[in-house]
Length: 70
Image 1 (cartoon, rainbow, N blue to C red):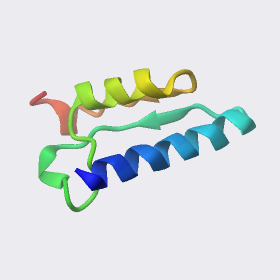
Image 2: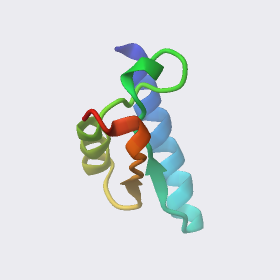
Image 3: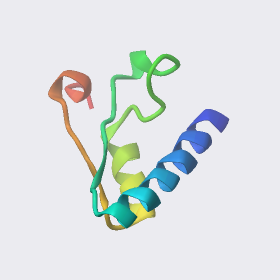
Image 4: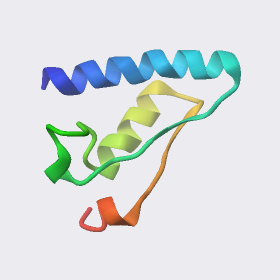
């Protein structure tokens, strides 16, 4: 759980930088099999919740290969 919080905090920091330079940041949820190797965001609902929490300037990229099961 600490890894998820740490990742969310870092995404929030990146979002602040992205807002300053006028770039939109995107989150791509990956398949749960990749938790531990590449991601802690493994569902569309988690990605959407994070976007709602962080506010404007961030969105979700959907790759059907990774979220077909969701």
